[in-house]
Structures are given as structure tokens and as C-alpha cells.
Image (tube, rainbow, N blue to C red):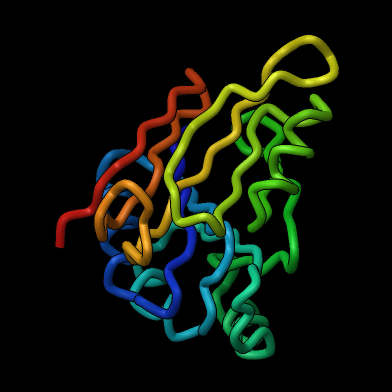
Length: 175
């Protein structure tokens, strides 16, 4: 199963929809959004693409009531999990949060195959050693809106993940 991992769209609907469209065209079956979605309108262009979106909020929460209302109307395509999410996709245990320090801590537990986080606007993929003596994948897609991307000047980034092979690729969105 392939998934799109995005974060920090900050109310910018076109780049989020473009990333989801690109991922879906490559076979992605779900989206994990790691926070700072902000408003429900950010999803209006993405939901018609018909791919399930799982989102957590971040430090820029926006309007959680509108997000919950959209979730109710989405016929199961949008799930707003609150501060964090525990998912199982393709037999993999996944934890999603906004904050990288929290994500790293959860990766260290060894309870998950993949931990997704955002907030830093810096895209990175790390094999985090955990307390079980193994490694957990830690994926931060950066900012799909290209906001304040350190080291990658104004690049809009997201991650394409293949959960069967546990292969992760940082993608740069060109609009």
C-alpha cells in the first residue's frame, strides 16, 4: 500500500490537492496529514479526489469545529484525529503527530513501524533506533505549502511512502 504523507499546508489548498493528486496517480490509497491543516476549506479541493485523509492538528489549530463538521459530511473520506493518531494501514502500525520531538519519542518506543510528524517545515526521513534494539521509520514531510523550508528555499515537499517495502521518498511539488 502506498500513502501520501503531508504536513503544514497552512490553509493553502492548491499545493495540498496537487500533492494528493500526484500521490494518487502513483497508486497512493491514503493520506496522512501531520498537522497545521488549519481550515476545513483547505480540504475542499482534496476530498473530491476520493482518497481517505487522516489528519492531526498542530500548533495552528484553526477551526476544529469546522474540521469536525467536514469530517461528518465526508462519508468516511476525512478523519480528524485530534492531537495524534494511531493507525494500522497495510499491516503496519503508524503513529502521527505534529511535533518532531514527540514523534521521535514515540519512534523510540518501538511500538510503531512508522511515525509521521511535521512542524519543523524540514523534510527528513530517519531510521530511529528504538528501545527494542531495532529501528523505527520517522518521516517528516516538511511543508507542502513551502513555508519557511530550511535548506530548501521555498520548496513544497511531501513524502510518498510504500508500506509494503517501507520505502520513503521526499517529493518536491512543482506548481
